[in-house]
Image 1: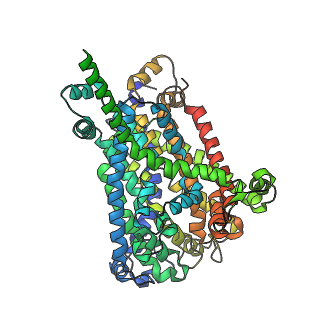
Image 2: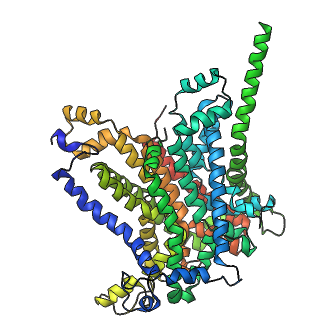
Length: 290
Length: 308
């Protein structure tokens, strides 16, 4: 084998790459099929939803499913926009607060020396393995004891500490040279200045990644509404969608609406990721566990 | 002299206060919502607790729940454990190897098609639980509107619609399939980034030194060079596999799943905790699950961890 053909991330196309495309393109196609199906399903008019045999792609696309969805109210009379509003507020607040606490902690873990620093980092690294649903019940008891039951903040507070986020941010801050911070200190900068003027501008890729991960977790989550919230007006959009979709009785007539609803859930995820893909890849190159 | 020393000390103290303030919010939230629940699970697992009366120590010096779980709970031994192992091994390590192979092939092609294809592979991992339930329930539906059934019927592979999501023979395999579909998450991205960052001169040197083919290249250069990303990817794969354990219930619409065919440990915990209110028993199952996850991760750390 010659040196020419063994390049990582080659600049030019070469015949030797064909074999990879032969596997990768069908694979990508296959992974996207269900997504295409939902798009098509969401745009189908009622008669096409009932069609037998069902067609994969929509023939006469319509937005009726979306307008139906926005007009529909849950059994308790709460309009859909209320759930959507709740979800937007919860997601925005969660992202902002998560970013603030992860960055400040990551900065301390990376650039400060204090007792228990190594211990804290290794406990956090252990917590990467933390599977929240494994301790659903004790977590429920903790949240109940704290009086967070049926409190709007229960959508936010329990999810703010994100071990993966802290891990990625800390690894990224490690790349910032210490000299830069020393120089700023000599110029009289305090921690607040260092964080906002030096660290944050340099670690935007990691912050973007954490923002995306938080978004995916919070926006899609139904756990908090399911377990802790009783008042219907405090529940989230994703929860509303599960009530819509888990009802098998409405299966065919509701299928179009359910598809429209899942699209509304999914499209923001996709859009944000596409915009920030480069930053995420940047962060991931520092993601290694040593 | 004394004065400068004094101001120096003040400086250090101020720095200490600042450090505490920086880490305090995270530490408080982390210990309350992550560490504390794990500890509570450990303690509760030795008690009887039904949420109404205060927990009291279980029989057999507190070990009753565990003894029950491993000797009397027929569903747990006969369905839940085998299901979980089969599911976790295929979705965890299996999904991980698949993700690595895909990432490796992607690293061998040009940047623009790589970005597009990796986006396509990553997309299913961000669709979220609601989407997964909606799309796969419609595709595998046992009614006439089920797309897969319609296809099979149309081409005469079958005579009548199969109740994919309600029949024990299909449910677990469909769960594995769906989980694999959505398993190319941030672990996959981390490995791809790691692959792209391997120092190119190393490959050239290795070929001079007599490495003969791609396989040797992967084993001797690529993987050792990106061990940290391999480990991160492995941990994410394990966590992802256990985290998506809810899909059996989401797909079949019932807990317990039909004849326990898609019952994983996660569902068993929910069944006992939130349906039967046997919190002590549910906690004992949680502890077993956490131990299984730690065990899986230990294997990953032995394979890819750097010893120092």
